[in-house]
Image 1 (cartoon, rainbow, N blue to C red):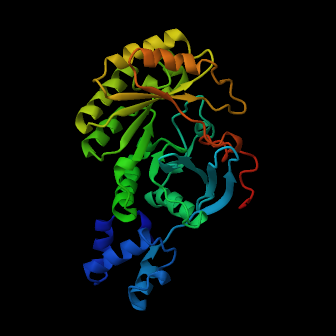
Image 2: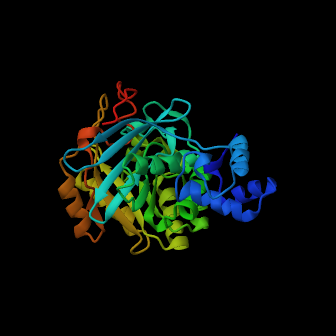
Image 3: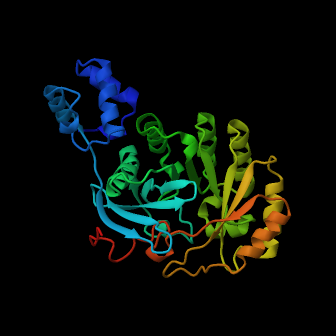
Length: 348
């Protein structure tokens, strides 16, 4: 059966007209699926019972199974553990900001990028997520919160490398915009630096914010932390980022997780300044991240976050320290799904 939530409007229109139905029926169905967020074709009361039966025979409406919902006491961050239809698990995080609520969405079940400090990569990649499985993280979260919370922005920074699932992510973004009605300027996409896909994304000019996981100011350190750097070094990556900025006019956020005695020295800060000063003016922002400790991982949180930030700012680099969300509920990507108790149901 066809996964109807993964169809764009044009694709759905083709399939509905193939059923000898007028095209406006596709618009009705699309609206009920993505605006009203129905979970069963029987709920689409704007169409006939006969058409609902046709839909049931040809299509399925996918769903996610909420296994765990954890609420952080310090900051009201909510983390959800969802089970997919094949038993794989993914994580979604709802964060509250002064400017509204953002939802951190996973794009893969696991990750094959192998970044040494990231919990998402520990078990490797199980598979890519379908567009519906990305959308459902939003829809099921809204349902879990009884539609009492508005989600103002989406960050593709959960489990997985979004650009390693390029086609499905682009399709998800189209449905998010045309179906759910969220402008893509309210979307951030984080990548470890897949240069060819960054260039492909630039050509689409979607208007979203690109966040690049940098995490080092030289190739040797970055290659040790992030295997992707052995394929696309800093020189090639930053050239691609410059092309993205030139094509889209969108400032890029560079993510830099500070790790004790690995990438957090004053010399590292100065090397980072030299790198970024070569980029087009006003094209970048540095987001400094206090690293999340992971069980069995040798990397520790840096004590030099504030001095490192001061060096960047005093040199004219736009830099901020990311606020920590949900530290008491394992809100960092990949931590909850790897827990020995991840399969336990806890819906409180």
